[in-house]
Image 1 (spheres, rainbow, N blue to C red):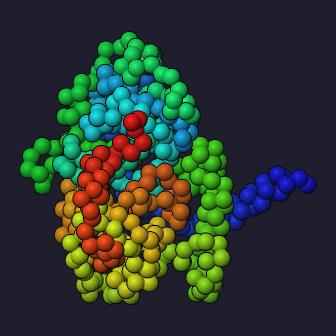
Image 2: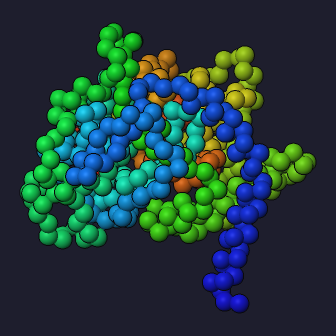
Image 3: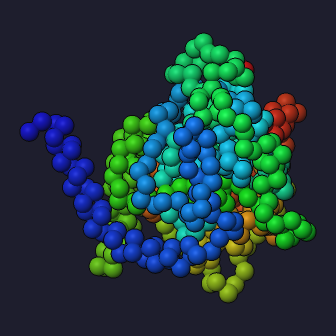
Length: 439
């Protein structure tokens, strides 16, 4: 038997065991979703393509969950140019969407610029309903993030979704010759037809309820994800093949993810081996360069307040994230500090040194569309994002949401940033989306 056949047999057996151990968890997630999916913050217009290729709204209530997926042909590392605003507007329906995915006003500033594909967005995580995986058609992520300027100053800095029709491929080399960004060589979907949507319409669709700020309901890509995507089961092995073939994730990381979830499923199966397995994991994780067992809860009772600390951190300062054990001392039994959940995805960053990117005091609640004002501010750090290494039902999601950090989980490394560092960080904070743009 060849080495390739052995590897294929091993991976097949691995996924069979993985599926058998996680069935109970999956059934529980389905029940939670069934009761929650009836809630909506906006009408659910699905989008169909006319013969000319121009999207048109249909009367269907939601996107067909069983439709065949059509992934992007772009891979991580490919270069693209964002089409002109006029070209993009011709691809949108009257709601400012393409296949249900909104084109947001914050995205206009990237038109005509050149970027490298960060990851293929063939799947994503839905944070509107109980967190789950979703399929996405013809979509990628660039190194571009929303600055919230058209959505009440939301500070979440979400990674933007870009439809293939909004981009012009340039190939693997950034030096490859390409037409001007406003030329007439756009796709047939946006070259002949009159736009069904104007720029003013895109701005108007950022809210679906006017009134005082407290009553305003915002509409963005994050709030619309359930209606611009299709269902994706965690056991659909094709998604992991595409993770690898698209350049999103390496083979070793996929193997490590499968081993972790098998290990985690056995340790929580209620057969009396959980404690020794967690001890073994915490004792020997340095051998494979991993992290301590990531799913642990704090010990503070829910009815008692969790501690807080004020460091008056500013953007640009260097901070060290405390160890996992130190952070656990600040959490209650539901792994929360002042209501903020400490996620397993944050454990791998513990002990590292990073630069403060932004102080976060308000974000849009994806489920309600309303602005959430934080009683206790939190922080996002440069390059510290969710990598979906330990995330149930959404493994290797490419969305790269920023992790939120309490000040009590951090300690200052440098007292104040230098003037040159401060200027650089201010530029990053206001234009962090342009990190991979053409110079």
